[in-house]
Image (cartoon, rainbow, N blue to C red; front, side):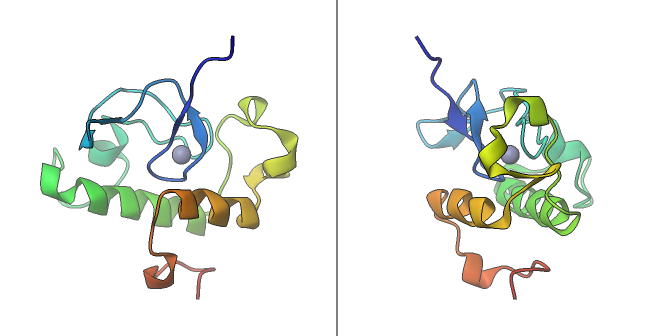
Amino acid sequence: MAKKLYSCLICGYKGLSENPLYKGEYQKTFDICPCCDFEFGYSEDHDVRLGFIVTPDHLIEAAFQLYRKQWIESGMKIAHPEYIPDEVKNGDCLKFEVLLKQLKNLNLDIDNFEIDGFN
Ligand SMILES: [Zn+2]
């Protein structure tokens, strides 16, 4: 039986073994997205610079958006391509149309993105 996988809150790729949301609340699972490499419980504090040692809860979404921006602008490189199906890849990177679809599934307002490549 295939294991249930959960969507990454950053890139939308469905490759997490634990749900980073529990009853709508963010939880630090220390699961790493095979696509964008975000580690839930680590990256929001260490891989973005918001000016805090530990990102306060009300800024977690901002940390997600900043990481997302950094990842997209640096070329959407797939962290663990061995876990990602070929049809969504463009070399080492995620296909842009696949990214759009994944972000749409997260209900993000991509018209309001200030990210290179989106406007
Ligand atoms: Zn991801």
